[in-house]
Amino acid sequence: MSYDCMCIAGVRLVSYAHGSIFCTPNRMSYIYRYDPWLTHLRMHGDMLRADRWSSGEAGPWQHESLVAAEHTLAEGEAIFRIAFWKSLEAAKSGMGYRLWSQMHVLHRVREDHPFFNAFERADDDFLIETAWLYWQTSTREPQQDWSRDGIPKSDIEILDLDGQWRAHQVDGSVGTFRAPRQACTLDAANDYDAAEA
Image (cartoon, rainbow, N blue to C red):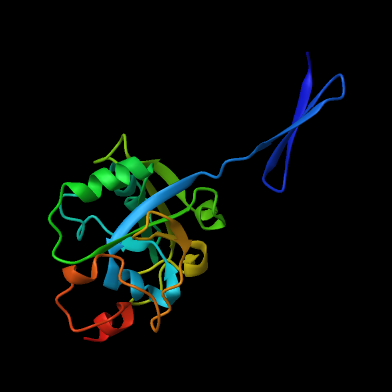
């Protein structure tokens, strides 16, 4: 039996030779990060961006692909990189075994986000089974520590306390804590108050 497949508006259409059509949802694929919540609130330019990497500043995190790319950099170029967990399970596992000095935010973005089109992707040398390393080489302006492009907050989803993924809505003036209120020692009622405390 022969058939053709195409995808329209997120739905996979399967058309068989005898004329029947079956529709199944086209599942979105996500990748994950967790970051300190104050860092998350204060994203550079309200975008999640790749940060500049150099072997001289990376300490023990000498990623082979980045070290190799550094040897071919032209004058005025730099490497920018960002890492993501490959799955929610990996992200939760990574969060669970550490004792944090501050609250963290677990967030996700679509794996096919246009931001990644300009990046190389490889297994993270230090987390090969569980994390992706995205990187690019591009011209660097003086004092530039972040990639020019980024993922807008509106394209980022946050795992809320009720276990639901929600579009990024913490705009600095409204919102609830992303960790239990009693876990915060600041005199604050929401994220914005805590950031200013």
